[in-house]
Length: 356
Ligand SMILES: N[C@@H](CCC(=O)N[C@@H](CS)C(=O)NCC(=O)O)C(=O)O
Image 1 (cartoon, helix red, strand yellow):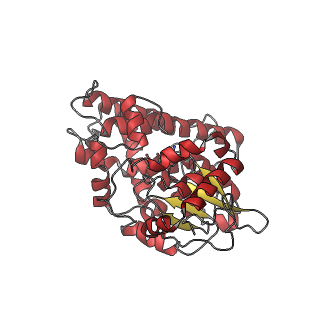
Image 2: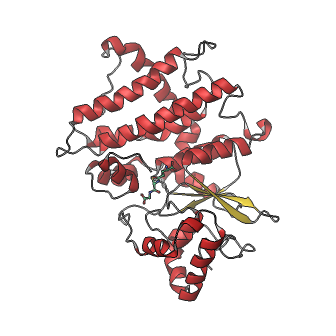
Image 3: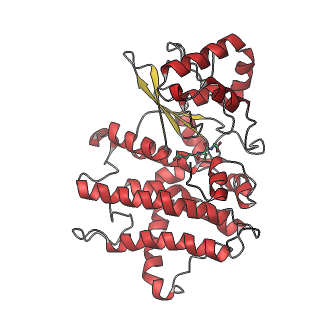
C-alpha cells in the first residue's frame, strides 16, 4: 500500500490508514508498487481530483522523475528538541493529519494553530523535496504544509488543503468551540478581522520575501547587503508602527501582541520568521541590524515595541513547542545563506518573483 494509501480520492484504501513513517518506509513501499498500479493511480487521479484534471499525466511523470531539488540527506529526517516531544504526542493515527517538515516556517504556522486551538491531530514528518507521486496527489504544488481533512460518509476520506494561511484560517474556523479550543485567533468584529488580514498580507508579501532576499544575499548580487537589510527592517517597522497606532476605535496598543493583549493570527503568521532571525546574525556580515535599546535614535519607540512583541512571541508555548534544536536550523539554512538551495522559495527570491 502506498504511504498515502488512505487517500481515497486515489484508490479506496480508506479502511486502513498508514503509519506516520513516510520518510523511512516510503522508498521500500515505492519499489514494491507495480508499474501498473502506478499508472492506474496517475490516471485515476487525473480523472477524480479537480486540480488534477488540469495536470496531464506527463506533467506528473515529469515531476516524479525530477531529482530531489534539495539534498536534505545531511539534515535529520525528523524533528529534534521540543518539536520532537510535540510530534511524539501526535504520532498516533488520527484522521486529521498535518504533513510537515520540521525546518519549514510555513509548516510551523499551521502547527502553532493546531497547538493554540488544542486540535486533536496526527503530525506526519515528510521530505517535501522528494516529490513522491502520493504526496503530489494530495498537494499538486508539492509543498508542505499539507493538511488531510477527514471527509466522506465514514469520515475516513482525506480531503487535502494546502497553503499555510488557508490551513491556519480553516483550522481556526473549523475548531471554534471556545470551551474546547480556547479563543479564536481572529477577532469577531468584521472590521478588526479585515485589518488583521491586511497585516497578514503585509507579512506575506513584504516581510517574508524581504527575509529571503536578506539571507540569500551574496556579494555577487546586484543589490547590496545594506539595501537588503534596510528593505527588510523597513517592512518590519511598517508593521510595528501599525501595532503602535492600532485601530482608531481601540486603545490597545501597548502590546505585547499585534492586537494588544489578544494573541491573533497576525502574530502566528510572523512567528516562524521571528524565530529564524538569529540565522541572519549567524550568517550575514553586519548581522540583522536591529538597534539595541537606547541606540535607535528617532526610532526608539518603534524598536522598543518590536522587542516587546519579539520577547513575547519567542516565549509563547506554542512557538517553543514547535521548534527543533537551534543548530539544526543553522545546518538547514546554510544553503540559503550561500544561495545554493534549489527550493522553490529560494528560486523565486533569486528571480525576484512572488514566493510560491
Ligand atoms: N506558500 C506556501 C509555501 C510553502 C513552502 O514553500 N514550503 C516549502 C518548505 S519550507 C516546501 O515545501 N518546499 C519544497 C520545494 O521547494 O520543492 C505556504 O504558505 O504553505
